[in-house]
Length: 222
Image 1 (cartoon, rainbow, N blue to C red):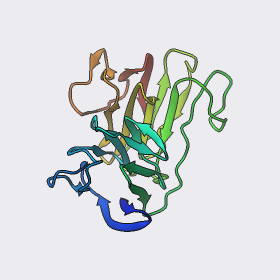
Image 2: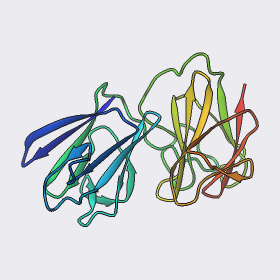
Image 3: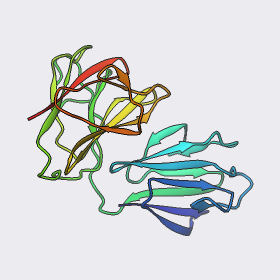
């Protein structure tokens, strides 16, 4: 479970639990997090839960949204990140203090435990969530083209994100009923079995072919 700690000049003003699919931030009173300051836009930013991950997106605000001092449009939040809107600072905390893993990037010759390199991200599992529900059979994704073609990576975490940050990102969430594929980031939706993803998410079945950021992957379930 994540929470947001809002502070001004080092003084904590409020704490907000991230429990909804979407948590809005802005100056208008209907936002979930209201910051009554002229430097904050009426609808400044939104935080969206995708599985166990939380993404923040700037809603074309006048003064921008910053994470750890860097302007962002949309970004996955990690434990300890500091969001800045105007003079306000909002710290994102994961209350179980999970050990976040870094994005794993694979290329020919790289091992699963190797250091990140340039290329297509495979997969990045955030949150250190431990074993997934036992009722969902083990599964993997197999890369069909590109520099990592032929590699097969087990979906061992509850939530796995794949793609190129800033270009196109999707998530695969392991649920008791099976695996669910969802669009996370990018103006162009990923393709499943030759058709663009129409809904927010779709259940995956053995043999489904996913394409995003120019890379094709096959979902394989035991």
